[in-house]
Length: 290
Image (cartoon, rainbow, N blue to C red; front, side):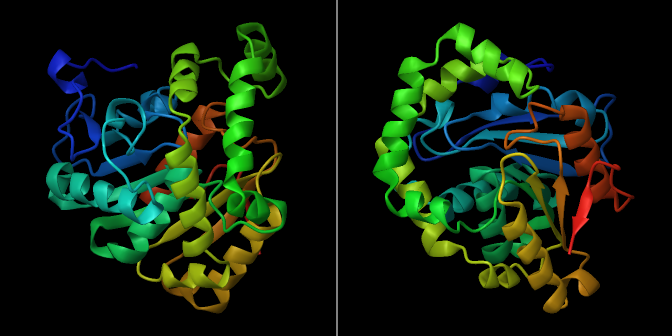
């Protein structure tokens, strides 16, 4: 983690509260807005360690471990997307500047972001999500039969050696992160897989994405692994329902990106966040989907 933290900051949170880490801008800036970063399934706040150096000079950052993950592993169920969104809402109310934040979510964290924006819009200055579109086709089948995914996670943890992990990172042009990998192995739990995938199927449809109608949203797909055409349709729904004209909500693809591309192109990922927050032109790698 490219930021200093006191031992007290890294203690497990109270049983009913998710872990969070607060990082002030460097150099300090009282006027800097808050960004809260929400990680993917089985991951942790360490997922953002390569992105943070590009953001910390400009923003107050809040990093969390979502329920049942890493330092929030002691929280009781349920582990559904809405329950996670409620936990994040509490952190924003208590620790974000002016009790509002720009919310950034990767994968599962993206679904949490969208649910938060729909149910707690007053807390969200904007939303930036990646790899978080409603499931269709084989992904919807897998989400409904989530025991297959659970045993897939368990099997991959058993067979992927350190050497294989290094090779996979090279193939996908991702930065190696051994500490994060150890946490992702520990965070595979049946109750979490069941609740997260089950609630995504129940909560999200392409047409239903119009319900995120009070918060300016960006949805981006990693072109190599995410549901690009579904992301395109989300952008079309936003445009047809007037959200693009009224708020600026839009969908994009980064063609060379894998699913977890915050670990692949962290500078571009952070550049997209900054541009979205500041309402500037997005990096050239962001291609509009319409």
